[in-house]
Amino acid sequence: MDIGWEGLLEDERRRDGAAWQDDYDHLARQLARRGIDIAAIQARASALAVALPSWGVATGGTRFARFPGPGEPRNIFEKLDDCAVIHRLVAITPEVSLHIPWDEPDDDAALRACAAERGLRFGPMNSNTFEDQPGQAHSYKFGSLSHTDRGVREQAVAHNRHCMDVGLKLGARALSIWVGDGGNFPGQLHVRRALDRYLDSLREIYAALPPGWRLFIEHKLYEPAFYSTVLNDWGVSYYCARELGDRAFSLVDFGHHAPNVNIEMVVARLIQFGKLGGFHFNDSQYGDDDLDAGSLKPFQLFLVFNELVDAEREGLPGFDPAYMLDQSHNVTDPIESLMTSAIEVHRAYVQACLVDRAALGEHQSRNDAIMALATLKQAFTTDVMPILAKARLDAGGAIDPVAVYRASGYRVRVADGRPARPRMGGGIV
Ligand code: LRH
Ligand code: MN
Image (cartoon, rainbow, N blue to C red; front, side, top):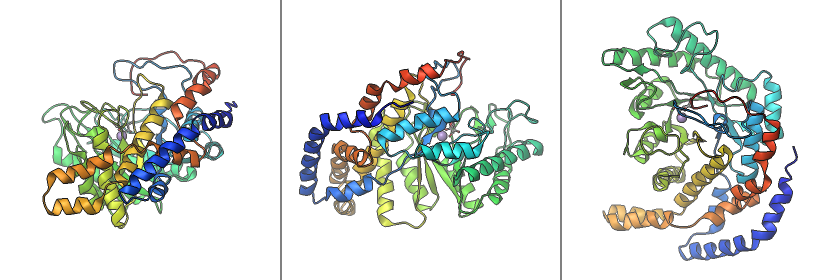
């Protein structure tokens, strides 16, 4: 379907290019007064890549209901079409993270070609042993990798091996494991033995990790288990990653912590211990709300990137965190939410690049809290949108991706070719 993106983008450049250039030159002068060369920041801004969750381009839901919108993608190929639109306009999302079996390819060569034609590649593979598939021998009702029954654990290990086989054919280079294993009642699980079984299963998966691959372990405080969760926090995740070996790392999903947990400190710890593998960016007010990244707590997102940029600057060995979005879009057009969230991640990164780290170090050594915070706030309150827009423009993207997307009428046009499916109950996808 020819949407005519080039024409729409040309119109935008002709209409808004001069205003953007004026804002850019003004920011360049502002930063120069701070001793910052905007070209150096620009180079870093253009290097950032954030992976899209394949499951995020369809409307999400809760256990109560899901309200699908028009033009819902019906298969992985249509999901890649939508991811390609996002990357076309924001230009920093070249990777798509798949979820198996939701995205199980019938023909992996066709899928790989489809992605390549759209300028996309595949990021970390996500396994799924938190729901049962039709015809499955053993149920995951009482867990998967930590289940008391060896048969269930072996089935879950085999599934993870399968995810790596699929990923190998698609060019992925990491496996990301989140399990919902846990209990709803005191006494239901032997807490220590459950973790031992989980780690034994991980060891079997780690032993099958293809060369050059990494394994990401994703912790979560609760849900779907509501009393005890086997892999409940970053400490347990770090312990497991260390036990497994050099290619195992912890993945931080923003929504997987108790309210008010200092996530930037969790990130700093994992960086310090050499076990930060990556992120699932999103935002939350209460629990694992999977809301749009930076929509509620942009300062927290900035503070996390402040730790990441500080580590990046030190050139810590093996420091190569994978950046991914993991959100559920229940009331917005998923394409608009993912574009807006990618921009918020981009903004937090570039703002963190503006922190005067020499001054910050000085203030920290003199315990001058006011000036230390002021140094961070100066960066956080800098409007870096002209730099973000230039990164997009230089890569053929849009100054204002959401505006160009709306002008394209893409959603209405794909809806013609994607008949609505009957609405079936709740659930995140
Ligand atoms: C679990 C989680 C995990 C995914 C799922 C879609 O809450 O964050 O990363 O597998 O959401
Ligand atoms: Mn997640």
